[in-house]
Structure formats: structure tokens, C-alpha cells
Image (spheres, helix red, strand yellow):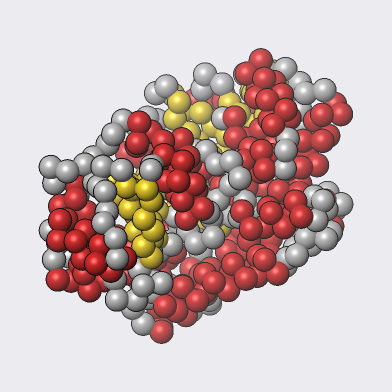
Length: 432
């Protein structure tokens, strides 16, 4: 399946960047598939080494960090000579071996132009808790995410629909009504299916019929995530807390005020005991954190309020599965209250896939802007609505007080622009 991430890999090769590449992202999002595709299409020879499959591969790096010696040991292991000038080496699940990560510094500094790519499903957690010498400035780190809605449309053969959506976004003109309805139908499907490649393939295999989609795929991915929590944590107690936070996310987002609260995890939960488990989930890319800002001014990061934040799941399909939401609840029941939570999580997921930091603004109990982003040194407020009802006192008050160059309202309505508010359909968030 076509992935935007391929462009970032291609850029690393086209610019002949010497730093080894490190790809960070959650399990099951397609990291290995897209890296292998890139390697096979761009190099004469490709060597894949997985630290999970080859259990004693780590021993090579425990004995030496010298690139030539490492390559020599690998040559003996695989029984053939490695042509450095024509070969790319892909170290998968590298988080298992800390010394292998440290060795990347020496691969970068070597006179030879080694082409090294690394990845790992819990690499973010490993870097967060790195005990040895991390090769700062000697690796190129890229973050990868589940498939966004545009990639979903590519996968199901709707490239022409994507092109029309982008044209309408640029020209600020409404989609033809019948095409708007078609795009909205696929958006509803995406809310249920999500962006995990395996789930999308199953949706395609069942002729794009969500009723026939095998929800067990989502359950299996969640089970694998929970297994990772047990395998890659400091203690059993930490694993339990991580799992409790993860399970609480549907309840967190179902509240009228979606700010994360520890007592929703468990009545007796507090920041002191659950802060590190929450950090683990963020570092693992299983959840995304959106911080509140104290004032809507650039640079936004200067005004972060780290004590107040929201937590979103990395994939809207998994969120629906975790909450046991049926397709009928999403597609047929317009008044389903949890649909608003799914919609907000979807927008967060789309923005995150575009490398946009997630932030929101809530100066009072009665006023809240769902997301704020910086564009050309200006703060743009974004309001999210699950349906066509778009009246909002919060947005009106914000515009009156801060006079942004324009505001964005995401809803089930068609494209439009009036009163300095750019109306963007839910299916077009990838255009922002």
C-alpha cells in the first residue's frame, strides 16, 4: 500500500545523509513493510537482521562497537561478503540491544558511507529510558504513524476522490453533493476501521463492507500492545498501571470535559503513582498527548501548561474497539454521544500524522478551542464537530477577542468560507 512515509525515506537516500536512520512508531503500523519496500527498490543488495528473530545477534555488539568488526562478524554469521557500497542494512527491533543503538554513532563517523536503517516497535520507550551513551546528533530520527485518511483512500483505489478533495480545499469551493456524501461515507468507515494496515486490508478483502469487517483484528493488535506492556516494563506493578491508563482512554474522552484525570483511571489513582506509566504510553506512541496552552501566542510551546492535558489513542479504529462501539453506532446513530469522542480522536490522529504538535486552549470552564496550530507565525484555532450542527459560543468569543487571520471549523458540512471561518469537512483534515 502507498505510504507517505516512503518520501521521507527517499529524502534520506537522495540527500545521501550519512547518519543512520532510526524509525520510531507503534507496532503494527507498517514500519517493516515500508522500509523493506524502500530498501529493495533503491539498493542492489539488502540485508535484513531482526534482533527478536536472531536471539544472539546482540552478542556481536556486546563484543565491539567498531563498524568494520561488526560487519565482519555479520559476514561470518550470514556466510557471505557484504558490499558496503551497494548494500543497505536494516536492523529491526533494535530496541532489544542498547549497544547496537550506541554503535550507530561509530557507523556515522566512519569514513565509509554505511547505509544503515533501524526500527523498533518500542524504540521510543527505549530511548526514553536509555542507560548507555545515546548517539546524539549521529542518527536521523523519523516518526511513523498509522495510515491517515488520505492513505486509506489511496488504499481503496479512490485517488480521484483524493484529488477532488484537495482541489476543493485549495479553491475553498464545495464538493458536488453526491461526492461529498461519498467522501463522508468513507470517513464513517474510517472511524470504524482506523488506520492500521492489517485492518484496512481486511476491509478491502470484504469489498469495503464494514458489517463484514473482522473486528478481531483490532482485538489482536490491542492484545499485542498489552503483551508489550508486560514484556518491556520495569515491574509488574508498572505494567498494571500502564494497562489501567490505556483501558481508561475511552472513558476519558467520553466526558464532556475531555481533560485527562487520574481518578478516571482508578478512584485512588494519583499523578505521583501514574505519571511514569503514562510517560511510557506516550513514548511508545500508543497514545498521543495534547497539552493545554495558557495563551494563544507564538511560539505556542512557550505557553504550554504541562499540568493539564488530553490523551488520545494512536488509532481511532482501536479506540472504537476498546470502547466496543459497533459500526451501526457510528454510521446509523447520529446522536451517539461517543461519536464526538471518536471524531476528536480522529482529528488528533490526522494532525499528528502531519507532524503537528497537539495543543488546545481552554481559558475558562465555558470556553474551549479543541486544537490550536501555528501557521506562518499566526495561531489558528480549530473547532471540531461530529455532525452538521456547528453553532459555537467558544469559537465566536475567541474570534472576537483574538482576531485570528482565520479560523477552522471541521464538521460534517461541505467546504465553505464565511465570517472568517474556513469550513472543512471531516474527510479533508489531511489537507490542513
